[in-house]
Image 1 (tube, rainbow, N blue to C red):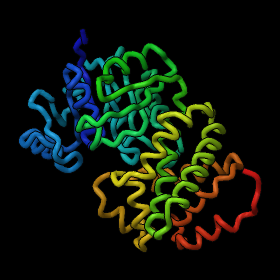
Image 2 (image 1 turned 30 degrees about the horizontal axis):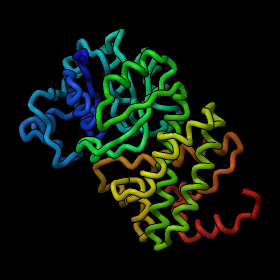
Image 3 (image 1 turned 135 degrees about the horizontal axis):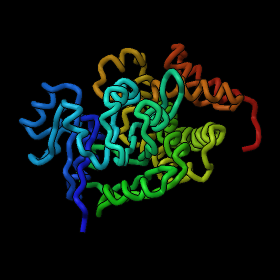
Length: 332
């Protein structure tokens, strides 16, 4: 029998809402916090997160609030579902409100733009709360919220914390695995977005399956290189938070990062695309972090470098392709 817990979700986007619904389905008392009270009230009134999870009904018993103290009071588990762009500011605003014994998991897929730190590291520092777990894997919010079978990984150096969160979220259509390699899990979730933009650009240029497969395969090599340089276990990148998430993000029509890349491949500028997007495409910011880390550690990351050049230096995508294909040939 499930022991009822109070679960608080910080972030009322699609992913936070979807995970809140999973916890509610599992019999827990769920509160979803969002920063804008007017939007929270509209969502409560229509029982639907129209901007981020259209068509999914939010039950009456799921509490929604813009009051941080109310949301976090007596919370047993806390899900940090804030886009990386706003992560530090939001996490700072809840410092001192986290119950001492709460299990906390970060589900944001990205790296900090300024420090290149992982999200769990930022949360541990800002909240002075340890441990912070991380959840990642091939998991579109739109599918998770509709009960589409999904498998993800929760990582934490503390086995008890990851086991508690695993039991909290696992059910017949949302399967949660655990690992202690939090570095690998978070980096897999962040770096795959960069490769997804590359695949999208290829699709937008009209290239085919051969090109897509090459980018995914060689992109995984770059993810492993960067991840291992930062202390991750190589085998993690063959799992759900590595290869699994890379495949779904590079091939799905639901992928915002692949979609941004496709539009760039068709001739649009990244700045123009982003100015009209409600939801985050984390790869746009993460490519700068990934490029910087690769450069610092003297790592070969040609796909990452070309995505950075296209987005931040306005390099022509066809010129980027020529740069990739004109590199010296070598053994695989």
